Length: 388
Ligand code: GLA
Image (cartoon, rainbow, N blue to C red; front, side, top):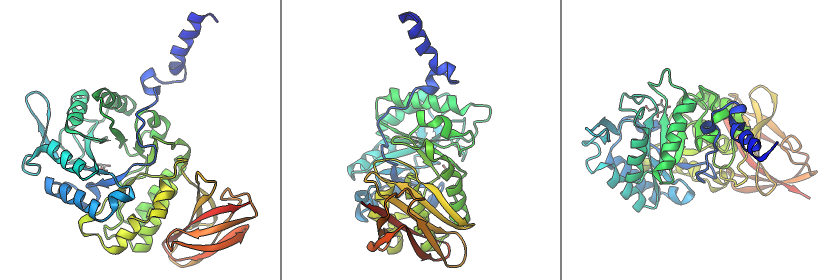
């Protein structure tokens, strides 16, 4: 092959591989090298968003230690926008956001936090507000000018559109805006995003909306848990935002929710009212040892490694230092003993040290396996460090 035909073959390679050059170009915004952490208004407040809520939330994230634990992005979800002006610029609700979005972003930045916003790839958002369809570049420019650091783009009112094209359009618009902006794809896993989204967004929803219920949390675990090979630094499966502290599950169930999201290297986007959270909720969301599992720089999503009987599961995630985070999950409604065999969890030494990441204590040295009783609807999360 001469130089010319060689260059042509390279240019055609993405097409030969089945995608347009644009859809195959890797997302290279150098953001979200570990799963994004923050807070989003939707799970607790739905459309009841306002300037004062966001300011108070930012203040509480600082005062409670959430910011310093890693929760950085403060994201307003749907319902902040009402219309477009004569030039097509998106307009915020002036009653709920009387100072405008830029002033709010400045406030959030002043608290050492980052600011995120929501839009939709279709003509209207899920709540009927103006979507970005046909305004992608203009909206990306507006958001960049406001100081937006994170955009979540939903998929309502987009029938007939191709998500691969629409999300690429917004990715490119964000890139051209000149501001580093994390891009969160939200098409609910309906078009196999794990196959194409790693080149398009920093995170992509893999599931329907989470509900504040044990069964919903597990359904999202099961669905997102199957896509582990797609996750890597800068590109994460998103089983949806956390429900911890919203009241629909027990604290044991919320500890399991947090443990499993950490095992899955899922984005940790709190969805509660952080202004009034209980000490138990705070202890779950801020557990530094669990956050460290989620944020481990190796960037591998953990997987289900063992299910001796239905409802008793062992999930394992490899960590940068050669240890493994292991969740022993009891999905049933009675206590039971669960055994983590080291070899199944990827530990190939005879013995390992076991540390319990919820009690913050060394459990001891174990040979070949670790067994413990796990309560109903609960998980034990340990770190196994091989002893060589
Ligand atoms: C969809 C998304 C949710 C939320 C709502 C807002 O359902 O999946 O996360 O953004 O829209 O309307």
